[in-house]
Length: 486
Image (cartoon, rainbow, N blue to C red; front, top):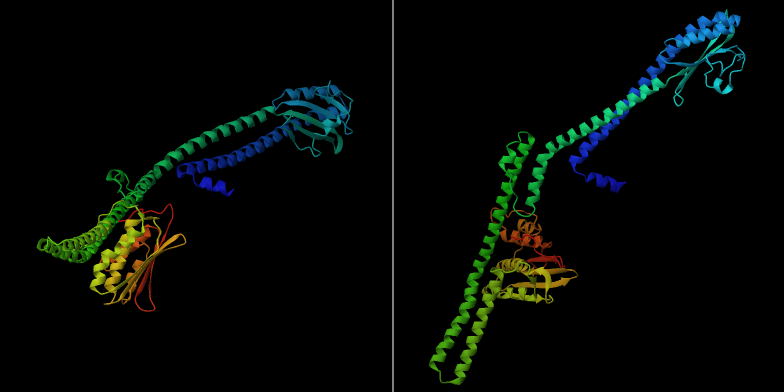
């Protein structure tokens, strides 16, 4: 029963409303038809009772003297005359009996001979008080009238009336009602369908544009479709268009601010990268000068070449880590341990500049079903913030491990702690659709959005020893993947 209601509830409104109209029309037509037929039946019976009463009144008045004398031929003659009169419903049989039930005369003497006894089955069809009894199956009505003279009973008049014409009239009325109701039901159901479809057409337009918006930017409703709507739907469409424009503007602003935050992070790393590249470059130039001055000494050449090789390897390591983070690549590339280990190179300058201790624990397996680039970007943001918040000669800790079916990433520092509004923004799990307009907490918003898009969560808490611990938990599975990261 519940499943049937659910299936019916899933039907479109353009079908349900006309169906309801049709059901109501059928119910109303059944009630009205029943009332009409009942009223017609009552009217026919009352009319028939009046006709039979008039028939019996006239017949009893004409035969009473003959019944008193038991003049059978005169009684028969009066029965024939009354039978040929205009009753409006044909009398099939008329029988006159004595009080004891013996027949004096009948309109059909062969079936009911004189001096015979009234058949009990026939007598049982008449009501005791003389009321009219209808037998619709046989198409007949039965009634009787007592005959008396000066208070002394003289006998009975039994009348059997053919009412097939009346029943036929009732059936014709019934068929007419049914056909009329069927035609009206179909007509009103069709008109209801057209009216509902016309009324719901604007809702279909709105639903169509909402469906299109699920795949990307929402599209406003063209003015050509709004122009014909001068009622509340027109106002609704214009408000929808205003909402779409505002949402698209916010999305564009969010994407632009996210890109600017990414570039700002790159700018903060630029000085560190320059330092990381300049140091080996200085040594390499010194090695080249040494080779030029002592080209004939094999030991000097071998040592200088080793310095050049170490310098080039260091430069390549810094450049590769930067390219992986900021050039991008396949957004759904699986996360590997090297994706996280490379981040030590990018934050090395900040660590050295502030004389920090970087404690690194990366316990990940070879690969995870999670997109690498957005996770690198989120962790790099948090590491840079942790370095900036830590005091000189402080400590920053990073840990990555699998906890059941989830990846846990933890960054700890010994700074002054996160402001409450920034911590709340970080823990919003991407529910904040737009970044803070004043620019405060932009990095936290971007990390929250990246993690939220991956179905994960971020939690920030104060450490007992001082500072902040930020934990990222991401579900790992075959279906894990980036859906819509700015």
